[in-house]
Image (cartoon, rainbow over all chains, first blue to last red; front, side, top):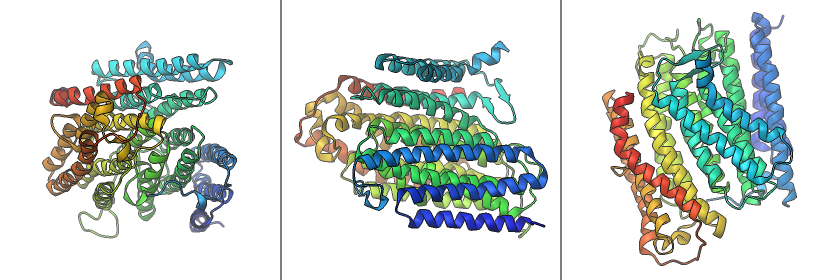
Length: 100
Length: 476
Protein backbone atom coordinates (compact mmCIF):
# COMPACT_ATOMS: atom_id res chain seq x y z
CA UNK A 1 0.00 0.00 0.00
CA UNK A 2 1.34 3.40 -0.93
CA UNK A 3 1.31 5.79 2.01
CA UNK A 4 1.26 9.59 1.97
CA UNK A 5 4.80 9.88 3.29
CA UNK A 6 6.11 7.84 0.35
CA UNK A 7 4.58 10.28 -2.13
CA UNK A 8 5.90 13.25 -0.16
CA UNK A 9 9.34 11.68 -0.03
CA UNK A 10 9.36 11.04 -3.79
CA UNK A 11 8.23 14.57 -4.61
CA UNK A 12 10.73 16.10 -2.20
CA UNK A 13 13.44 14.06 -3.88
CA UNK A 14 12.31 15.28 -7.30
CA UNK A 15 12.14 18.85 -6.06
CA UNK A 16 15.68 18.69 -4.63
CA UNK A 17 17.00 17.25 -7.90
CA UNK A 18 15.35 20.09 -9.80
CA UNK A 19 16.68 22.81 -7.47
CA UNK A 20 20.14 21.23 -7.64
CA UNK A 21 19.88 21.27 -11.42
CA UNK A 22 19.00 24.96 -11.48
CA UNK A 23 21.86 25.80 -9.12
CA UNK A 24 24.50 23.68 -10.89
CA UNK A 25 23.55 23.52 -14.58
CA UNK A 26 24.93 26.24 -16.82
CA UNK A 27 23.54 25.01 -20.13
CA UNK A 28 20.15 26.39 -21.10
CA UNK A 29 18.57 23.05 -21.98
CA UNK A 30 19.53 21.42 -18.68
CA UNK A 31 17.97 24.38 -16.93
CA UNK A 32 14.65 23.93 -18.72
CA UNK A 33 14.71 20.24 -17.81
CA UNK A 34 15.27 21.10 -14.15
CA UNK A 35 12.28 23.46 -14.23
CA UNK A 36 10.12 20.66 -15.66
CA UNK A 37 11.28 18.32 -12.88
CA UNK A 38 10.32 20.86 -10.20
CA UNK A 39 6.85 21.30 -11.67
CA UNK A 40 6.40 17.52 -11.94
CA UNK A 41 7.33 17.11 -8.28
CA UNK A 42 4.35 19.22 -7.32
CA UNK A 43 2.15 17.43 -9.85
CA UNK A 44 2.91 14.07 -8.22
CA UNK A 45 1.77 15.44 -4.86
CA UNK A 46 -1.46 16.87 -6.21
CA UNK A 47 -2.32 13.79 -8.25
CA UNK A 48 -1.64 11.39 -5.38
CA UNK A 49 -3.79 13.38 -2.98
CA UNK A 50 -6.58 13.80 -5.53
CA UNK A 51 -6.73 10.03 -6.02
CA UNK A 52 -6.58 9.55 -2.27
CA UNK A 53 -9.62 11.72 -1.48
CA UNK A 54 -11.41 11.10 -4.81
CA UNK A 55 -11.45 14.76 -5.83
CA UNK A 56 -11.63 15.62 -9.52
CA UNK A 57 -10.35 19.18 -8.96
CA UNK A 58 -6.83 17.92 -8.37
CA UNK A 59 -6.72 15.80 -11.51
CA UNK A 60 -8.05 18.73 -13.52
CA UNK A 61 -5.42 21.00 -12.03
CA UNK A 62 -2.58 18.60 -12.90
CA UNK A 63 -3.67 18.66 -16.55
CA UNK A 64 -3.66 22.47 -16.48
CA UNK A 65 -0.27 22.68 -14.86
CA UNK A 66 1.24 20.29 -17.42
CA UNK A 67 -0.08 22.58 -20.16
CA UNK A 68 1.38 25.61 -18.38
CA UNK A 69 4.75 23.89 -18.01
CA UNK A 70 4.70 23.19 -21.74
CA UNK A 71 3.93 26.85 -22.51
CA UNK A 72 6.70 27.93 -20.20
CA UNK A 73 9.29 25.71 -21.85
CA UNK A 74 8.17 26.94 -25.28
CA UNK A 75 8.93 30.50 -24.23
CA UNK A 76 12.20 29.35 -22.68
CA UNK A 77 13.28 27.62 -25.87
CA UNK A 78 12.29 30.65 -27.93
CA UNK A 79 14.48 32.90 -25.78
CA UNK A 80 17.35 30.41 -25.96
CA UNK A 81 17.08 30.17 -29.75
CA UNK A 82 17.17 33.95 -30.16
CA UNK A 83 20.11 34.08 -27.76
CA UNK A 84 21.89 31.43 -29.82
CA UNK A 85 21.34 33.42 -33.02
CA UNK A 86 23.03 36.44 -31.43
CA UNK A 87 26.20 34.36 -31.08
CA UNK A 88 28.06 33.01 -28.06
CA UNK A 89 25.73 30.04 -27.55
CA UNK A 90 23.41 29.30 -24.66
CA UNK A 91 25.84 28.92 -21.79
CA UNK A 92 24.23 31.05 -19.12
CA UNK A 93 27.46 31.49 -17.19
CA UNK A 94 28.76 33.58 -20.10
CA UNK A 95 25.89 36.06 -19.94
CA UNK A 96 27.63 38.78 -18.01
CA UNK A 97 26.65 42.03 -19.74
CA UNK A 98 24.41 43.08 -16.89
CA UNK A 99 26.51 43.36 -13.78
CA UNK A 100 26.89 45.97 -11.15
CA UNK B 1 -28.25 40.13 -16.32
CA UNK B 2 -27.52 43.17 -18.45
CA UNK B 3 -26.21 44.75 -15.30
CA UNK B 4 -23.55 42.10 -14.86
CA UNK B 5 -22.52 42.16 -18.50
CA UNK B 6 -21.99 45.88 -18.26
CA UNK B 7 -19.64 45.48 -15.35
CA UNK B 8 -17.74 42.79 -17.19
CA UNK B 9 -17.37 45.07 -20.21
CA UNK B 10 -13.77 46.28 -19.57
CA UNK B 11 -12.33 42.79 -19.64
CA UNK B 12 -14.54 41.51 -22.48
CA UNK B 13 -13.43 44.48 -24.56
CA UNK B 14 -9.74 43.69 -24.07
CA UNK B 15 -10.45 40.05 -24.91
CA UNK B 16 -12.14 41.08 -28.17
CA UNK B 17 -9.23 43.34 -29.06
CA UNK B 18 -6.73 40.49 -28.56
CA UNK B 19 -8.81 37.96 -30.52
CA UNK B 20 -9.35 40.37 -33.41
CA UNK B 21 -5.63 41.14 -33.58
CA UNK B 22 -4.75 37.44 -33.66
CA UNK B 23 -7.46 36.26 -36.02
CA UNK B 24 -7.63 38.98 -38.67
CA UNK B 25 -4.68 38.39 -41.00
CA UNK B 26 -2.62 40.98 -42.89
CA UNK B 27 -3.23 43.83 -40.51
CA UNK B 28 -0.67 46.56 -40.86
CA UNK B 29 1.21 48.30 -38.10
CA UNK B 30 -1.19 51.21 -37.67
CA UNK B 31 -4.24 48.99 -37.33
CA UNK B 32 -2.66 46.79 -34.69
CA UNK B 33 -1.43 49.78 -32.70
CA UNK B 34 -4.83 51.44 -33.00
CA UNK B 35 -6.88 48.42 -31.93
CA UNK B 36 -4.61 47.59 -29.01
CA UNK B 37 -4.37 51.11 -27.63
CA UNK B 38 -8.07 51.84 -28.15
CA UNK B 39 -9.03 48.61 -26.44
CA UNK B 40 -6.89 49.39 -23.40
CA UNK B 41 -8.07 53.03 -23.35
CA UNK B 42 -11.78 52.18 -23.45
CA UNK B 43 -11.41 49.54 -20.77
CA UNK B 44 -9.53 52.09 -18.65
CA UNK B 45 -12.45 54.52 -19.06
CA UNK B 46 -15.03 51.82 -18.29
CA UNK B 47 -13.24 50.66 -15.16
CA UNK B 48 -12.97 54.29 -14.06
CA UNK B 49 -16.71 54.58 -14.59
CA UNK B 50 -17.28 51.52 -12.40
CA UNK B 51 -15.17 53.13 -9.70
CA UNK B 52 -16.68 56.61 -9.94
CA UNK B 53 -20.25 55.32 -9.69
CA UNK B 54 -18.88 53.76 -6.49
CA UNK B 55 -21.09 50.75 -6.66
CA UNK B 56 -19.92 48.80 -3.61
CA UNK B 57 -22.90 46.48 -3.90
CA UNK B 58 -21.47 45.15 -7.13
CA UNK B 59 -19.97 41.90 -6.09
CA UNK B 60 -20.12 38.60 -7.86
CA UNK B 61 -18.47 35.44 -6.73
CA UNK B 62 -18.07 31.95 -8.11
CA UNK B 63 -15.90 28.96 -7.28
CA UNK B 64 -13.01 30.51 -9.12
CA UNK B 65 -13.34 34.30 -9.21
CA UNK B 66 -14.56 37.09 -6.98
CA UNK B 67 -15.06 40.22 -9.02
CA UNK B 68 -15.77 43.37 -7.08
CA UNK B 69 -15.18 47.09 -6.81
CA UNK B 70 -11.61 46.48 -5.65
CA UNK B 71 -10.74 44.38 -8.69
CA UNK B 72 -11.53 47.32 -10.93
CA UNK B 73 -9.66 49.68 -8.63
CA UNK B 74 -6.43 47.81 -9.36
CA UNK B 75 -7.28 46.90 -12.92
CA UNK B 76 -7.54 50.64 -13.57
CA UNK B 77 -3.90 51.02 -12.51
CA UNK B 78 -2.79 48.14 -14.73
CA UNK B 79 -4.56 49.47 -17.80
CA UNK B 80 -3.30 52.99 -17.06
CA UNK B 81 0.34 51.94 -17.16
CA UNK B 82 -0.34 49.50 -20.00
CA UNK B 83 -1.82 52.30 -22.08
CA UNK B 84 1.08 54.67 -21.52
CA UNK B 85 3.77 52.07 -22.03
CA UNK B 86 2.22 50.99 -25.32
CA UNK B 87 1.79 54.63 -26.41
CA UNK B 88 5.42 55.46 -25.78
CA UNK B 89 7.00 52.56 -27.64
CA UNK B 90 9.30 54.20 -30.20
CA UNK B 91 11.34 52.75 -33.06
CA UNK B 92 9.44 49.48 -33.17
CA UNK B 93 10.33 47.28 -36.12
CA UNK B 94 7.46 46.31 -38.41
CA UNK B 95 7.86 42.63 -37.57
CA UNK B 96 7.82 43.14 -33.80
CA UNK B 97 4.73 45.34 -33.69
CA UNK B 98 2.19 42.56 -33.35
CA UNK B 99 4.17 40.93 -30.53
CA UNK B 100 4.30 44.07 -28.39
CA UNK B 101 0.75 45.17 -28.98
CA UNK B 102 -0.80 41.75 -28.45
CA UNK B 103 1.26 40.77 -25.42
CA UNK B 104 0.63 43.98 -23.47
CA UNK B 105 -3.20 43.69 -23.43
CA UNK B 106 -2.89 39.95 -22.93
CA UNK B 107 -0.77 40.40 -19.83
CA UNK B 108 -3.21 43.05 -18.54
CA UNK B 109 -6.09 40.61 -18.95
CA UNK B 110 -4.18 37.85 -17.18
CA UNK B 111 -3.38 40.25 -14.31
CA UNK B 112 -7.08 41.10 -14.00
CA UNK B 113 -7.94 37.42 -13.61
CA UNK B 114 -5.03 36.86 -11.24
CA UNK B 115 -6.13 39.56 -8.81
CA UNK B 116 -9.76 38.43 -8.92
CA UNK B 117 -9.08 34.73 -8.28
CA UNK B 118 -10.28 33.17 -5.06
CA UNK B 119 -9.09 29.70 -5.93
CA UNK B 120 -5.53 28.52 -6.26
CA UNK B 121 -6.27 26.79 -9.59
CA UNK B 122 -7.45 29.92 -11.38
CA UNK B 123 -4.85 31.97 -9.53
CA UNK B 124 -1.97 29.82 -10.72
CA UNK B 125 -3.17 29.66 -14.31
CA UNK B 126 -3.72 33.40 -14.66
CA UNK B 127 -0.54 34.25 -12.76
CA UNK B 128 1.41 32.07 -15.18
CA UNK B 129 -0.32 33.64 -18.17
CA UNK B 130 0.74 37.06 -16.92
CA UNK B 131 4.30 35.87 -16.22
CA UNK B 132 4.81 34.07 -19.52
CA UNK B 133 3.69 37.04 -21.59
CA UNK B 134 6.06 39.29 -19.67
CA UNK B 135 9.01 36.92 -20.21
CA UNK B 136 8.50 37.41 -23.92
CA UNK B 137 8.01 41.17 -23.56
CA UNK B 138 11.23 41.57 -21.57
CA UNK B 139 13.29 40.07 -24.40
CA UNK B 140 11.55 41.98 -27.08
CA UNK B 141 13.76 44.06 -29.31
CA UNK B 142 15.93 40.97 -29.80
CA UNK B 143 19.32 42.27 -28.75
CA UNK B 144 21.92 40.66 -26.51
CA UNK B 145 21.11 42.89 -23.56
CA UNK B 146 17.37 42.38 -23.59
CA UNK B 147 17.67 38.64 -24.21
CA UNK B 148 19.98 38.34 -21.24
CA UNK B 149 17.47 40.23 -19.11
CA UNK B 150 14.72 38.00 -20.41
CA UNK B 151 16.49 34.69 -19.77
CA UNK B 152 17.36 35.73 -16.22
CA UNK B 153 13.75 36.71 -15.63
CA UNK B 154 12.58 33.46 -17.19
CA UNK B 155 14.79 31.20 -15.07
CA UNK B 156 13.82 32.87 -11.81
CA UNK B 157 10.18 33.09 -12.88
CA UNK B 158 10.06 29.40 -13.75
CA UNK B 159 11.72 28.50 -10.46
CA UNK B 160 9.22 30.66 -8.57
CA UNK B 161 6.27 29.08 -10.35
CA UNK B 162 7.61 25.65 -9.40
CA UNK B 163 7.83 26.76 -5.77
CA UNK B 164 4.30 28.20 -5.91
CA UNK B 165 3.02 24.94 -7.38
CA UNK B 166 4.69 22.94 -4.61
CA UNK B 167 3.10 25.30 -2.07
CA UNK B 168 -0.27 24.76 -3.72
CA UNK B 169 0.19 21.00 -3.57
CA UNK B 170 0.93 21.11 0.17
CA UNK B 171 -2.03 23.44 0.66
CA UNK B 172 -4.21 20.89 -1.14
CA UNK B 173 -2.89 18.00 0.93
CA UNK B 174 -3.42 19.80 4.21
CA UNK B 175 -6.86 21.29 3.51
CA UNK B 176 -8.37 19.01 0.82
CA UNK B 177 -9.34 22.04 -1.25
CA UNK B 178 -7.88 24.64 -3.56
CA UNK B 179 -10.19 27.40 -2.41
CA UNK B 180 -8.74 30.34 -0.53
CA UNK B 181 -11.94 31.65 1.02
CA UNK B 182 -13.70 28.52 2.19
CA UNK B 183 -11.48 26.19 4.14
CA UNK B 184 -13.22 23.64 6.31
CA UNK B 185 -10.30 22.58 8.41
CA UNK B 186 -6.67 21.65 8.39
CA UNK B 187 -5.55 18.08 8.81
CA UNK B 188 -1.79 18.58 8.79
CA UNK B 189 -0.41 21.71 10.44
CA UNK B 190 3.24 21.40 9.51
CA UNK B 191 2.38 20.95 5.82
CA UNK B 192 -0.01 23.91 6.07
CA UNK B 193 2.66 26.22 7.46
CA UNK B 194 5.14 24.92 4.88
CA UNK B 195 2.68 25.62 2.08
CA UNK B 196 2.09 29.20 3.26
CA UNK B 197 5.83 29.84 3.51
CA UNK B 198 6.35 28.39 0.02
CA UNK B 199 3.60 30.63 -1.35
CA UNK B 200 5.27 33.60 0.35
CA UNK B 201 8.59 32.71 -1.26
CA UNK B 202 7.08 32.12 -4.70
CA UNK B 203 5.16 35.36 -4.85
CA UNK B 204 8.04 37.09 -3.09
CA UNK B 205 10.15 36.36 -6.16
CA UNK B 206 7.63 38.26 -8.26
CA UNK B 207 7.45 41.14 -5.80
CA UNK B 208 11.28 41.12 -5.57
CA UNK B 209 11.49 40.89 -1.80
CA UNK B 210 14.96 40.73 -0.31
CA UNK B 211 16.48 37.27 -0.62
CA UNK B 212 14.65 36.78 -3.93
CA UNK B 213 15.38 40.11 -5.58
CA UNK B 214 18.41 39.36 -7.76
CA UNK B 215 16.60 38.97 -11.06
CA UNK B 216 14.78 42.28 -10.73
CA UNK B 217 17.74 44.59 -11.09
CA UNK B 218 19.17 42.88 -14.15
CA UNK B 219 15.78 42.54 -15.80
CA UNK B 220 14.65 46.12 -15.25
CA UNK B 221 18.02 47.42 -16.40
CA UNK B 222 18.40 45.16 -19.41
CA UNK B 223 14.86 45.23 -20.71
CA UNK B 224 13.56 48.10 -22.75
CA UNK B 225 12.55 51.06 -20.56
CA UNK B 226 8.86 51.00 -21.51
CA UNK B 227 8.71 47.29 -20.83
CA UNK B 228 10.39 47.78 -17.48
CA UNK B 229 7.84 50.45 -16.67
CA UNK B 230 5.18 47.76 -17.10
CA UNK B 231 7.17 45.05 -15.31
CA UNK B 232 8.19 47.09 -12.32
CA UNK B 233 4.69 48.43 -11.66
CA UNK B 234 1.84 46.30 -12.95
CA UNK B 235 3.32 42.87 -12.48
CA UNK B 236 4.63 43.78 -9.04
CA UNK B 237 1.31 45.18 -7.85
CA UNK B 238 -0.35 42.03 -9.17
CA UNK B 239 1.92 39.92 -6.94
CA UNK B 240 1.17 42.19 -3.97
CA UNK B 241 -2.61 41.99 -4.43
CA UNK B 242 -2.41 38.21 -4.84
CA UNK B 243 -0.47 38.00 -1.57
CA UNK B 244 -3.03 40.21 0.19
CA UNK B 245 -5.86 38.08 -1.22
CA UNK B 246 -4.21 34.92 0.01
CA UNK B 247 -2.80 35.86 3.38
CA UNK B 248 -5.67 38.04 4.57
CA UNK B 249 -8.41 35.65 3.47
CA UNK B 250 -7.26 32.19 4.50
CA UNK B 251 -7.92 30.84 7.95
CA UNK B 252 -5.27 30.87 10.59
CA UNK B 253 -5.34 28.73 13.64
CA UNK B 254 -3.28 27.83 16.63
CA UNK B 255 -0.74 25.15 16.05
CA UNK B 256 -0.97 22.08 18.27
CA UNK B 257 2.71 22.34 19.19
CA UNK B 258 2.56 25.18 21.66
CA UNK B 259 -0.03 26.89 23.78
CA UNK B 260 1.66 30.28 23.51
CA UNK B 261 -0.76 32.86 22.21
CA UNK B 262 1.28 33.94 19.21
CA UNK B 263 2.47 30.56 18.11
CA UNK B 264 -0.19 30.51 15.42
CA UNK B 265 0.23 30.32 11.68
CA UNK B 266 -0.32 34.05 11.27
CA UNK B 267 2.04 34.65 14.18
CA UNK B 268 4.80 32.92 12.24
CA UNK B 269 3.95 34.66 8.98
CA UNK B 270 3.84 38.19 10.34
CA UNK B 271 7.33 37.87 11.85
CA UNK B 272 8.63 36.56 8.49
CA UNK B 273 6.99 39.43 6.64
CA UNK B 274 8.37 42.08 9.00
CA UNK B 275 11.93 40.71 8.78
CA UNK B 276 11.73 40.45 4.99
CA UNK B 277 10.29 43.94 4.54
CA UNK B 278 12.94 45.58 6.75
CA UNK B 279 15.77 43.77 4.94
CA UNK B 280 14.25 44.64 1.54
CA UNK B 281 13.99 48.34 2.35
CA UNK B 282 17.53 48.62 3.65
CA UNK B 283 19.03 46.53 0.87
CA UNK B 284 17.24 48.43 -1.91
CA UNK B 285 18.00 51.88 -0.55
CA UNK B 286 21.63 51.31 0.43
CA UNK B 287 22.55 49.61 -2.84
CA UNK B 288 20.80 52.33 -4.82
CA UNK B 289 23.16 54.87 -3.23
CA UNK B 290 26.10 53.38 -5.13
CA UNK B 291 24.64 53.29 -8.63
CA UNK B 292 25.86 55.52 -11.44
CA UNK B 293 23.35 54.15 -13.92
CA UNK B 294 20.02 55.93 -13.40
CA UNK B 295 17.95 53.05 -14.73
CA UNK B 296 19.70 50.65 -12.37
CA UNK B 297 19.13 53.09 -9.53
CA UNK B 298 15.41 53.11 -10.36
CA UNK B 299 15.45 49.30 -10.33
CA UNK B 300 16.99 49.24 -6.86
CA UNK B 301 14.53 51.83 -5.63
CA UNK B 302 11.70 49.65 -6.89
CA UNK B 303 13.06 46.89 -4.65
CA UNK B 304 12.98 49.34 -1.75
CA UNK B 305 9.37 50.19 -2.62
CA UNK B 306 8.51 46.48 -2.50
CA UNK B 307 9.78 46.60 1.07
CA UNK B 308 7.40 49.46 1.91
CA UNK B 309 4.55 47.51 0.36
CA UNK B 310 5.35 44.36 2.34
CA UNK B 311 5.13 46.34 5.60
CA UNK B 312 1.33 46.16 5.38
CA UNK B 313 1.47 42.44 6.16
CA UNK B 314 2.47 43.26 9.73
CA UNK B 315 -1.28 43.69 10.34
CA UNK B 316 -1.49 39.87 10.28
CA UNK B 317 -0.41 40.20 13.92
CA UNK B 318 -4.01 40.86 14.95
CA UNK B 319 -6.46 38.03 15.29
CA UNK B 320 -9.09 40.23 13.66
CA UNK B 321 -7.00 40.60 10.52
CA UNK B 322 -10.00 40.03 8.28
CA UNK B 323 -11.61 43.29 9.38
CA UNK B 324 -8.62 45.18 8.00
CA UNK B 325 -9.18 44.08 4.39
CA UNK B 326 -11.05 47.23 3.11
CA UNK B 327 -8.55 49.52 4.86
CA UNK B 328 -5.61 47.57 3.42
CA UNK B 329 -7.03 47.71 -0.09
CA UNK B 330 -7.53 51.47 0.25
CA UNK B 331 -4.04 52.18 1.62
CA UNK B 332 -2.37 49.90 -0.91
CA UNK B 333 -4.44 51.48 -3.67
CA UNK B 334 -3.16 54.95 -2.84
CA UNK B 335 0.40 53.69 -2.45
CA UNK B 336 0.34 51.79 -5.71
CA UNK B 337 -1.39 54.64 -7.56
CA UNK B 338 1.55 56.80 -6.51
CA UNK B 339 3.97 54.02 -7.36
CA UNK B 340 2.50 53.46 -10.83
CA UNK B 341 2.56 57.13 -11.73
CA UNK B 342 6.02 57.98 -10.44
CA UNK B 343 7.92 54.76 -11.18
CA UNK B 344 6.19 54.19 -14.52
CA UNK B 345 6.79 57.84 -15.40
CA UNK B 346 10.48 57.70 -14.52
CA UNK B 347 11.04 54.55 -16.56
CA UNK B 348 9.22 56.20 -19.47
CA UNK B 349 11.55 59.17 -19.12
CA UNK B 350 14.45 56.72 -19.45
CA UNK B 351 13.01 55.53 -22.76
CA UNK B 352 14.17 58.74 -24.42
CA UNK B 353 17.79 58.03 -23.50
CA UNK B 354 17.50 54.35 -24.33
CA UNK B 355 16.17 55.00 -27.80
CA UNK B 356 18.73 57.59 -28.85
CA UNK B 357 21.91 57.15 -26.84
CA UNK B 358 21.76 53.52 -25.63
CA UNK B 359 22.89 54.35 -22.13
CA UNK B 360 21.34 55.94 -19.07
CA UNK B 361 24.22 56.89 -16.79
CA UNK B 362 24.30 60.07 -14.75
CA UNK B 363 26.62 61.60 -17.37
CA UNK B 364 23.99 61.13 -20.05
CA UNK B 365 21.49 62.98 -17.92
CA UNK B 366 23.79 65.83 -16.94
CA UNK B 367 22.67 69.21 -18.18
CA UNK B 368 19.27 67.92 -19.20
CA UNK B 369 17.65 71.19 -18.13
CA UNK B 370 19.46 73.02 -20.95
CA UNK B 371 18.67 70.50 -23.64
CA UNK B 372 15.11 69.73 -22.80
CA UNK B 373 13.59 71.82 -19.98
CA UNK B 374 10.19 70.11 -20.06
CA UNK B 375 11.63 66.61 -19.61
CA UNK B 376 13.96 67.88 -16.90
CA UNK B 377 11.24 69.59 -14.85
CA UNK B 378 8.79 66.69 -15.16
CA UNK B 379 11.45 64.10 -14.29
CA UNK B 380 12.40 66.25 -11.30
CA UNK B 381 8.80 66.28 -10.08
CA UNK B 382 8.63 62.49 -10.45
CA UNK B 383 11.88 62.07 -8.50
CA UNK B 384 10.59 64.40 -5.74
CA UNK B 385 7.49 62.25 -5.63
CA UNK B 386 9.60 59.08 -5.34
CA UNK B 387 11.57 60.68 -2.51
CA UNK B 388 8.31 61.55 -0.78
CA UNK B 389 8.36 65.34 -0.76
CA UNK B 390 4.95 66.93 -0.04
CA UNK B 391 2.58 67.78 -1.70
CA UNK B 392 3.32 65.15 -4.34
CA UNK B 393 1.52 61.83 -4.60
CA UNK B 394 4.50 59.82 -3.37
CA UNK B 395 4.35 61.61 -0.03
CA UNK B 396 0.63 60.88 0.30
CA UNK B 397 1.07 57.18 -0.48
CA UNK B 398 3.79 56.80 2.12
CA UNK B 399 1.90 58.98 4.61
CA UNK B 400 -1.25 56.86 4.60
CA UNK B 401 0.79 53.64 4.75
CA UNK B 402 2.84 54.79 7.74
CA UNK B 403 -0.25 56.33 9.37
CA UNK B 404 -2.07 52.98 9.20
CA UNK B 405 0.92 51.26 10.79
CA UNK B 406 1.19 53.85 13.56
CA UNK B 407 -2.52 53.59 14.29
CA UNK B 408 -2.17 49.86 14.74
CA UNK B 409 0.76 50.01 17.19
CA UNK B 410 3.52 49.37 14.66
CA UNK B 411 5.11 52.79 15.14
CA UNK B 412 8.63 51.32 15.17
CA UNK B 413 8.09 49.76 11.76
CA UNK B 414 6.80 53.08 10.44
CA UNK B 415 9.90 54.75 11.92
CA UNK B 416 12.15 52.34 10.00
CA UNK B 417 10.17 53.22 6.88
CA UNK B 418 10.70 56.93 7.48
CA UNK B 419 14.45 56.41 8.00
CA UNK B 420 14.62 54.53 4.71
CA UNK B 421 12.65 57.25 3.00
CA UNK B 422 15.22 59.74 4.27
CA UNK B 423 18.10 57.64 2.91
CA UNK B 424 16.44 57.50 -0.48
CA UNK B 425 16.30 61.30 -0.75
CA UNK B 426 20.06 61.34 -1.35
CA UNK B 427 20.16 59.32 -4.53
CA UNK B 428 17.06 60.92 -6.03
CA UNK B 429 18.42 64.40 -5.43
CA UNK B 430 21.78 63.47 -6.93
CA UNK B 431 20.01 62.91 -10.26
CA UNK B 432 18.28 66.30 -9.94
CA UNK B 433 21.63 67.91 -9.20
CA UNK B 434 23.20 66.37 -12.29
CA UNK B 435 20.31 67.57 -14.42
CA UNK B 436 20.46 71.17 -13.24
CA UNK B 437 24.01 71.99 -12.18
CA UNK B 438 26.20 70.06 -14.62
CA UNK B 439 27.09 70.89 -18.19
CA UNK B 440 25.64 68.68 -20.93
CA UNK B 441 28.08 66.11 -22.32
CA UNK B 442 26.14 64.20 -24.96
CA UNK B 443 23.65 65.45 -27.48
CA UNK B 444 20.33 63.62 -27.52
CA UNK B 445 17.45 63.95 -29.92
CA UNK B 446 14.21 65.19 -28.40
CA UNK B 447 11.06 63.14 -28.63
CA UNK B 448 7.98 65.32 -28.17
CA UNK B 449 5.48 62.53 -27.55
CA UNK B 450 7.60 60.96 -24.82
CA UNK B 451 8.11 64.35 -23.22
CA UNK B 452 4.37 64.92 -23.19
CA UNK B 453 3.74 61.52 -21.58
CA UNK B 454 6.28 62.21 -18.83
CA UNK B 455 4.86 65.71 -18.35
CA UNK B 456 1.36 64.24 -17.99
CA UNK B 457 2.66 61.82 -15.35
CA UNK B 458 4.29 64.69 -13.45
CA UNK B 459 1.11 66.80 -13.57
CA UNK B 460 -0.93 63.83 -12.36
CA UNK B 461 1.56 63.24 -9.53
CA UNK B 462 1.00 66.78 -8.27
CA UNK B 463 -2.74 67.13 -8.86
CA UNK B 464 -3.75 63.73 -7.47
CA UNK B 465 -1.31 64.35 -4.64
CA UNK B 466 -3.18 67.49 -3.64
CA UNK B 467 -6.55 65.74 -4.01
CA UNK B 468 -5.56 62.58 -2.10
CA UNK B 469 -7.11 63.51 1.29
CA UNK B 470 -10.39 64.11 -0.52
CA UNK B 471 -10.13 60.76 -2.36
CA UNK B 472 -9.28 59.02 0.90
CA UNK B 473 -12.26 60.53 2.69
CA UNK B 474 -14.81 59.61 0.01
CA UNK B 475 -13.45 56.11 -0.45
CA UNK B 476 -12.71 55.26 3.16
